Amino acid sequence: MASGKDAVLRLLRKNVDFSFVKSFTSRPRRHNEKTSPPYKFISRKKFKKLVSKNFFWEFKKLYGHFYGIAKIDIRRALARQKPVVFRVNEQGADKIKSFFPETKSVFIAPPSLEVVKERAARRKSVPRRLKNKRLAAAKKQLNSLTKDQKWDYVIVNKDLRQSVEKIGRVIGSLKTQ
Image (cartoon, rainbow, N blue to C red; front, side):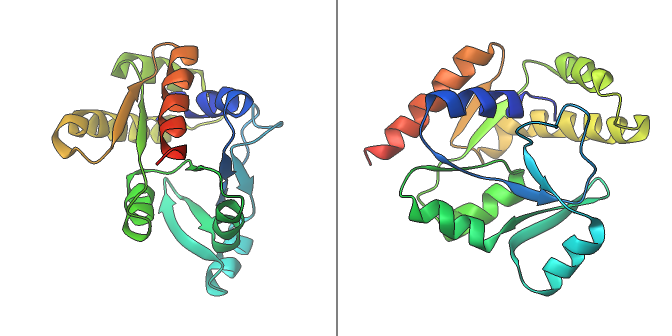
């Protein structure tokens, strides 16, 4: 949704000790995802093959591409006995909470819909019709944030460092529980 999730996660990794579970995706890599990509990129054919082998703990088709979390990656992350961070949408967060009720969810929100529009406009590799779909979804999601109460924490990413500090405090509070 162009809220800065990847930038937050990159900086968070430098400051906080946690296990990060990358999702697999069938979407193509963007030009800025050469180093430390937020996903494990695989072909659509390979993704479907892995689905047939029951490889994914959960998966979803979104904007024409598949996204999924591997069972083995969850087991490895849990074995490290550190807080585990996933980068998922609402459905993924709901599924994680259904299996791990003690999970705390954090929604990283953009400062405004205008900021989402600006950030989306800068993504040259995303087709216009997909940008429009994402903007409509972002608007709906932002409007539902106050109604749903689905998220344990909502952090508005106005300032990257402040957002990272807030999420770091959330993760730090989980270690002591």
